[in-house]
Length: 202
Image 1 (cartoon, one colour):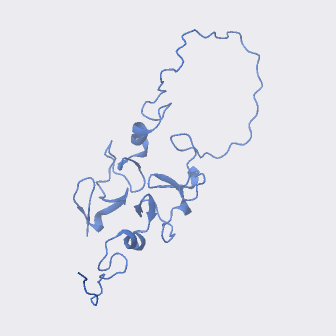
Image 2 (tube, rainbow, N blue to C red; image 1 turned 30 degrees about the vertical axis):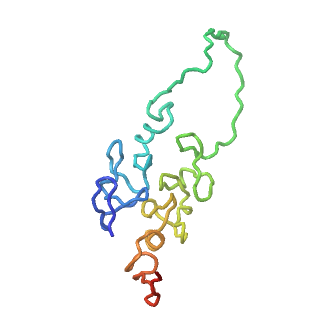
């Protein structure tokens, strides 16, 4: 049984489908809701079940506002909580030169989320550094952590199924767990018959 594309509502056949956000799409229907750029499955952001480019569209619409991030491109100021309008005295005397403390080695960059917090792998709950990350299901994963929830096979970003935010192999795991039951599909690979020897009890 073929599914319906969430964008055009037409039938999606196996040869033309890509799976993302838990749905089957036509390859050219999986587009950013804002700019209509064609997206790769698993390589995009999601908001309210709709796909968006990570940058600039998702960042502009839903990211924090600040210098060169979010929609504003500059600071967005909120009205100060303190309504005190007393002018602040500025110190005009030059300060004696202060010796700056030397810093130790800088830790490798891991701050790649919009919030400034390190990205955390949804499988192992450890920090995901830029050089080791793969993006899928709107999250950053360690490469070995992106694996099927059922059989633990390592998966490629965008080439797997999803159910309740967890990745699954298309075949056999997703098909067995969530696919239709019948000939060569679902749990047993053949028709599911009721026992003909049992009589209906009325």
